[in-house]
Length: 399
Ligand SMILES: Cc1ncc(COP(=O)(O)O)c(C=O)c1O
Image 1 (cartoon, protein in one colour):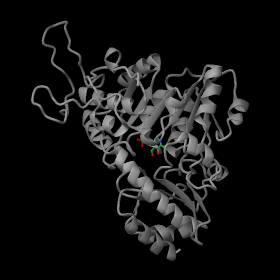
Image 2: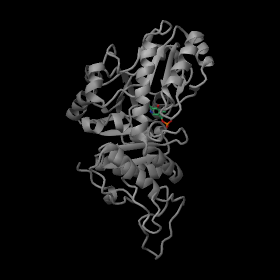
Image 3: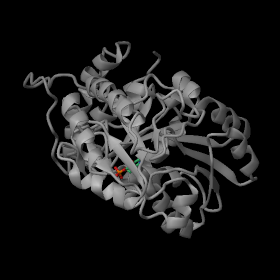
Image 4: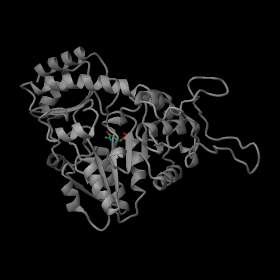
């Protein structure tokens, strides 16, 4: 791997000898050198807003935590090493990361976005950024030809989620990257559902990858954060500047917590995925379930692409019941699954996108995109598979 340490352009990278190691080793060790002063195995949490300047006119490496903090820098190096990126810029949330990515563009820019995006991303685009002169157009990116067809002179970015949220459709990153590269635009991939353990879009030609670290990367449902990863030094520098200027940076405490979570990312993803496969089997053979959305199913429309593009099919499963009242009966009967928004934590979460995560998309628009009232989304956690399956079986009987 030709990963270069970030010291030259971003604040505070520590030396690391683990850049050529396997994924789980990098997750545990990159940016995590023991504290040289005390020998503490875990790098300390630098909970400070400012840094002393020992001599007038000679500030040290760090000045003020909105612009740079060693705990945050360590996390940025760690996540960059996992996504095959040179640069990582951490934000206070996934939405703050998305907002800063769009600010790389100038007003008047046309952005082609996937039709099946996280509802909060759609809300940010339509109810905030559209008012500042950015023009978003939503197309079904599972067919790259739709992107070419929507292209205009002002198109500056293609913004996709793959697998998409909540319908688990897969877009071909390599094919779309060819289109954007040819035309001088950026391809941005929201990799939140997969985590770098299962998919690394930069290796497939994407220009910028981002995560809501709130999900799998932190993995314990106890922090909010975001990260952008790229090999483009100009974009990285501009994102650092935007983040510090608008104050979108991640707090040191959140960075420390997220780093703790990252260390078990590989084993959490393996466990969650193994159980998800059993959950899919149960749902796919159940008479009350109309349809299951999971890229690992041979019947999934982009199953072959998923096999090529991803290192596994992940821990997210969506399925459809008859209607909202069936959903209510199911959700009210579960005891191990927790009814809550979000995903990617150690606890299995279940939600109804139409009334929860995607409620900010108008009903008609939602329906047109296939997010029906009867849709249920599961994020499979790391509990015992037998307990989760028994819980689902029992609840489905009440539907
Ligand atoms: C796929 C996806 N992207 C982005 C976000 C936004 O992240 P955050 O909630 O950390 O702002 C979410 C949140 O649910 C998400 O699921």
